[in-house]
Length: 118
Image (spheres, one colour):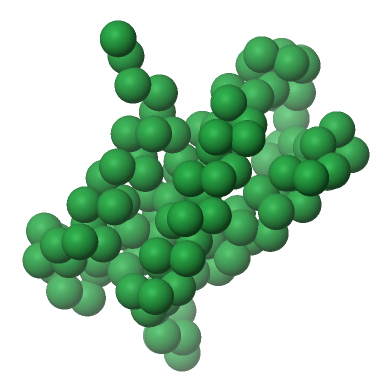
């Protein structure tokens, strides 16, 4: 049985949260944020592939706008999480990397979003 992409990404992010020494010290928080964000993106892609395949060709922003209306309990949370992860994943010299506590919270939220969109 093949493990879905979102679940694989979350498993690797979880492993990184448990053992940050798997990658360079300065890189692990953003690497973890990228993995969690990818899991959310894969879950959204899977949702649209199953429900409205034509939306897979639209921008991520458009997908989240439509998702908010189609899934009012999950869509806004998924979009907010994706936005936070997008900001955290991009390196800016004037911003601190996300903390382990923030990453754990986002990971738990992503697990919930992935399950709801599956």
